[in-house]
Length: 390
Ligand code: PLP
View 1 (tube, helix red, strand yellow):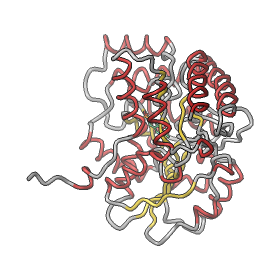
View 2 (cartoon, rainbow, N blue to C red):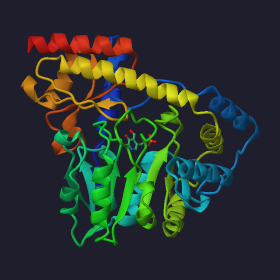
View 3 (tube, protein in one colour):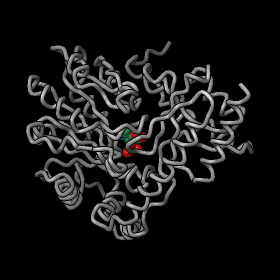
């Protein structure tokens, strides 16, 4: 009998990828599947980015780069973040990684380990929970509440801190809810964290460019008193429609960077040079197409929220950001898992059951509206017919 590491064998696969595989298999069999399961923009990256990648594929860099990223790219990211949030950022704090997920994994490796506790949002992006587990630490979920427009109660988060807590993971705008943490809630949390100077915070802001009117998004980079213990996670995947390119960045306090650099040399050496040159073109180039993506998502959000609220047994809040809706389906009488399963097999609409995002996600499903308006309307119609019949 082979003896494998239970920290690895105990990891659960992310539900959205499981649904993606099933949806693709059904599509290949000829079923008219509409996939609202996976969270990725349905656009192509702007052409100046593709041209930069073409040039780099021809002219290089072809070899390894610095583990933490090409210096010009680190500088460009530092300028970009500093300009967005009106804070000081230097290139030495920037670490380029193959996808936003890697920053999560490395932060959990750095602060986790046996005996450590890490706080994470529930419902929340599943890799938080699994990366915490893989590091050997104990994950402690804090509730994300529908009645707070899918934000958290800062006092409830602070009350979960114990002497073993080393890291708190925050996510705004959020997956799976689309919730944006309102600035007053962030202010209150930051004020409370002043009493816990030993705690680091990973602020996952990968949807920061997809914030809709009036949602009141604030970045943790805007709190100077937190800068020596905040890790910012952002990247290219969602903003520039580059999920498959595997590109992300973290802004880490400089004393943490040397450790992350070592982890990179053990793990993947560096991000491939072509992708880094494309990333440089993206972050230094015009943002008008990105704004068009945002406007398109905002229109689809209206369509989806109205359509969901029109379904029997379903209610849906208007999400402040990202491209997800997280409707409450408790009135349908079906569990999230049954509903998602039956919608896929009987109506060919793929979405993700809410409890795959944590136990507080039971009674909800996640629907990604990164699909055309026609597909969204058709999916809503199929869901309506199905729910009328159950
Ligand atoms: N953080 C959140 C909240 C996400 O939803 C995702 C992707 O779905 C990521 C991080 C990871 O993004 P990437 O594809 O760049 O690894």
